[in-house]
Image (cartoon, rainbow, N blue to C red):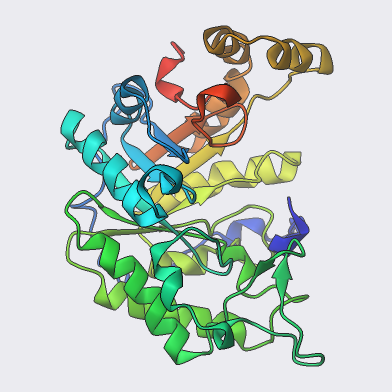
Length: 342
């Protein structure tokens, strides 16, 4: 877990009572609408992928992505080939949809980090950056990435419009909001910032075109309090990461997966190999055959897949990878979960 997320293992007492999206008698703001969710059945494990490629995906990679139920086109997609992340994302989405129109494709938008290479950055204003209240210095994630300030209403409109401009395209099925765990970080953010972000998110939800999805990197077993389930009042689902750090976070993740599915929210669990020792890791790194890498890491899928299957209800999707979500051929990253026979 990166300290920028402001996460520490949550207290385990009274765990059962905290795993609720809605309190007793509280209505679901989304009315439990799952009509636009990805295809789902229990015939096989449903899969999803997060991926980026600075240039152009190969035909084989497009085929791999088209075999998933959900594809989240990460930041830094296609900007070197097409001039901007927006253009690169849209081009990849069109190619994937030509192969399989049923794939749900999500546009990446960070809640807090101002990343480069987006066309929308041409209208970015420096006054919209978050600053420390005592020094007026810029807040920077990992000491280099400037931060958004959701208390600024002009920024809020710019950020929301970025999402809506992309979801106007029929090939883009929704938005993936990353960095939600950062919005109330006690070290970097003022006390009223988390509420300001919620206001932004609710406005985006209210203006989102009919039939479009809103997914986030929100729910985590290690997050203090309610594990960020409160964000599922405006989100259709959540990515789950950081769950492998302890027996408590593993146990709680099983229940979170179940709770989300039962209450009509998508679960997108991400996992890496578990149980690989240094010798096996060195073997993977040494091989220059991507197929061989797939063969090696398949032996370590059992535990994370088992955790997913213990909790999964309807609307659960699983991904398993080795290396960052980068499809550049020279990196030889494992990213396609459908290639594992198990």
